[in-house]
Image 1 (cartoon, helix red, strand yellow):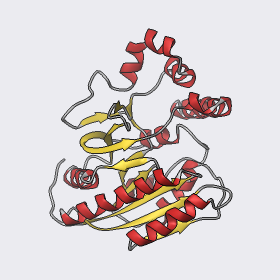
Image 2 (cartoon, helix red, strand yellow):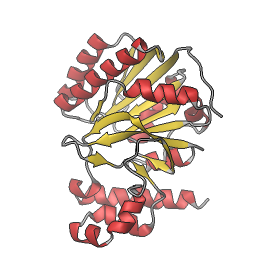
Image 3 (tube, helix red, strand yellow):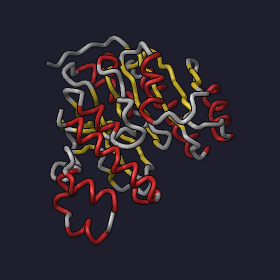
Image 4 (tube, helix red, strand yellow):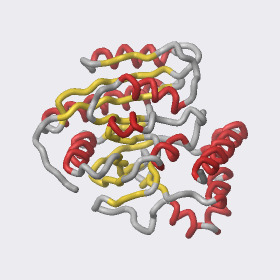
Length: 273
């Protein structure tokens, strides 16, 4: 059921950092600041609290620089440090447990937000009370579309994504296109989706708390699918735009591929229960 209101709302943002390049992280922080300013100007947001979370066992120089930048730009900011490398989901939960906002954004440190992204996302959630999560339209740094919305993956899809062979990807193009909604995307209209990528998930905070945030079973990979699977209605919103500079598991070495497959086994098992 759709409802409309002109009352401004509150937002919190959790950004987990693990030794991210400072220039990339600075771009994320600066674009977030501009998007918040625009949303406040458009009267879709009242205020925002920014949680900057260090997931590294130490405190890298890049994180210290990011803290200094964030403190200059944000009035409401909380630095979360000293927990070590507890995994992406658990680190995000540190912010989810603290916040009392209306909406919470789970944000990767390698995302550049369009200036209207938060305004569009918050406005949509405010006007569509049956939707609990919105995912963005994303491009990479070269302007090419990235397909962050996903359908429930099969074992074949996971194998193909894990090894990322150009030859096999070409042979199984139809299956991979189905997995990433290329039969429906790009589009100018919001579409309901099955799963969302964790690089940018704008959610109702109430729902995140009801499902206890991310499952602690995952260290890295598939924690975003597991979380979005538990949320009833998810929508890809093409007017909410970002630039994403994320990578693929197969480009990060054999240990990451093993972790990718291990996390999928957890996800597959939990999806059957």
